[in-house]
Image 1 (cartoon, rainbow, N blue to C red):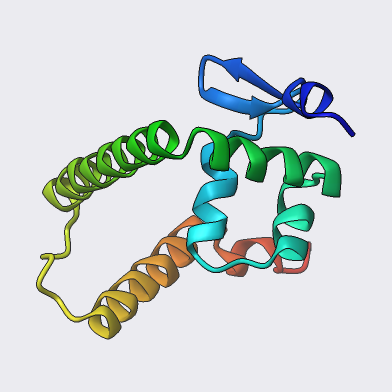
Image 2 (image 1 turned 180 degrees about the vertical axis):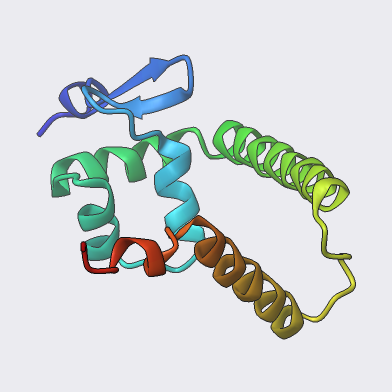
Length: 131
């Protein structure tokens, strides 16, 4: 397959370079590659063909510096957003952030049990025989 045909498999989208006809970005594939996923796992995860994956790898190789720079920016923004969301969560959480995870689970399970009990109808009135 010629380089021209393979390039048509990667198109520019508002999210960045993507596999044509999909919402899968080069950056998504790159993230999986950096986390050590195999080619087969990536193809299964993103429902891509060998040809599409090869086109992404060629695109990354041909535009390495630009793709690495944009990827680093995406990762930076993602970390920043995660920190903001965690701050908002802990601000509204009834459980202090320093509470150990096991204790958080116990508290949340108890709250769930309490909520389920309070939402169940009173069985005494529903199961009584009619006279």
